[in-house]
Length: 122
Image (cartoon, rainbow, N blue to C red):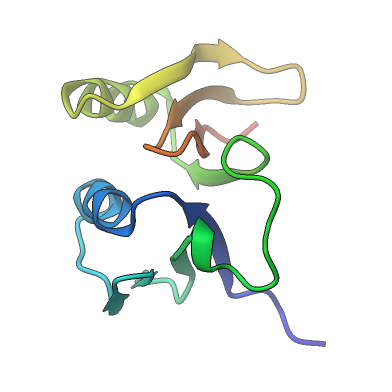
């Protein structure tokens, strides 16, 4: 069976969300249209943004029901990332916290409320 290679987020405003992720990821979308944008990361993973009002079949939910995870090597990088995200104006839903299952985590939110979890290894 094939391995997952992408995650799709349903968004209200493609240009706004595309600009957010372009700034966050430091790269331009590989595919861009009025209703869809896709970022191809160096590790081969793809992040796609799809206009909620164009999703087929229609989707009942938007934002906050899943997370995009970013693993960083240590606490210093996590704290640096948090500082950078705050400067960018990214809303922080969870300040750094040692989690019961391991590692320290913080959670930011994209313009549609999708969770962006940054974590250190256990």
